[in-house]
Amino acid sequence: MVAGNVKYVRGNCLAASISHQRILIHSCNCNGSWGGGIAYQLGVKYPQAESDYIEICERYGSRLLGKFVLLPSYTDSTLLIGCLFTASFGGPNQGSSESILNYTRRALEDMRVKLATEEKPSDEIDVFSGEYINKFKNKLRSAVSDYSLEMPQINSGIFGVPWPKTETLLKDQSTLSFSVYVI
Image (tube, rainbow, N blue to C red):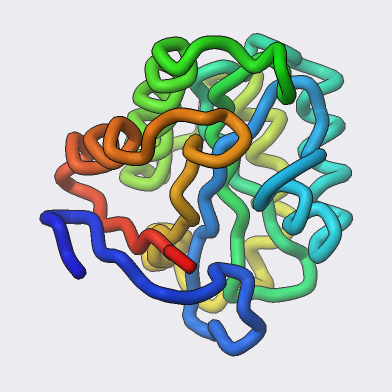
């Protein structure tokens, strides 16, 4: 099913059979915990990426809210991990749906800008986090802008935000195309 710039794909977004170049996007907290949902699964499968995420969170904490950070998976040159920082904390202290949606909107816009430009970042967080991808760029098969944007139904699991509200934010990013995995 396709709804504008959002296409739905039935299956597991972490399936080993997926071999095309993609950025797997998920929403996460700024507290350094990939403790549940898709984030937990990413941490188990890509521990070096989780270590990078923890380092960024320890350094910048809630200053990451509304930011997009791209991390290499380290084990698969076709997979990059896109972190949308949408909550300060996970679990019961994650914040309201409105707050999560606000930071999701800002992080999606940050992602759009970062993927559309090759300019060197000037923001301290972007300079620091950009080093992870810069160290891995020689292993990438093509430019990051050529990778497809894929995700599960972000925010709708542990964060408890009704999916149609997040879907609206994706549709607002009309210059980007998203594949959303549903099981």
